[in-house]
Length: 112
Length: 118
Image (cartoon, rainbow over all chains, first blue to last red; front, side, top):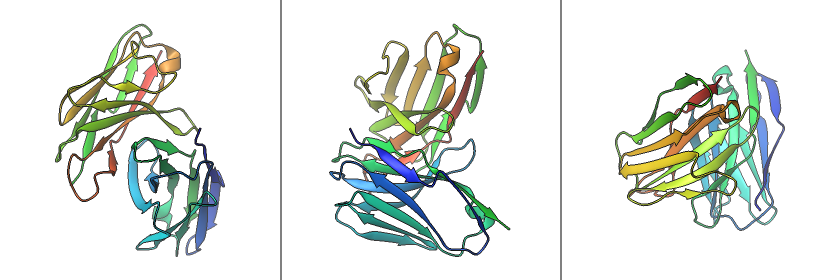
């Protein structure tokens, strides 16, 4: 059974700092991995999707890497801003079944 | 584009009543929709996969007779929580997969429905 773990559970940083969020998964047989952002009481916004054959994806200040063999992904946020404050969720898609298995998320607070 | 809406956003009901939650894809057709549940400080957990015109597929441990899913069109799926009890209080989120497009594997998520059963 696939399990997704995110570390740390919460992170507080000053504005402007670069930071890394971690995601690990137990079964490396994944189709793709996604990073989402969830604001309090809201739905999810997809940030980056990495296919199993890819090593990284970039969008603006965000960079996500994937090491499938070791079951790890990282989300790098450059020059953090208060508007980046949210919970970041990592989810893996198993073998094209479209079933997403989520981690519990990392709650990020960027202080002005 | 690719907007998913949910209605209602908030529901407070008495124990024993049934609650219907709607999930709509506003600007695309969705053959498949997914229903998730999120308890406080927990992961989103997939409850069921809803396919247009066919029966939903439920995840292990999810009671299909309690959580009724209807996906009658390519833009609408409904989740009915029958005889709701306080333990059903949760945040319910749907997602929809585009029938066609550059990234068919991408799921677009709705804003969620918070259910509180008294």
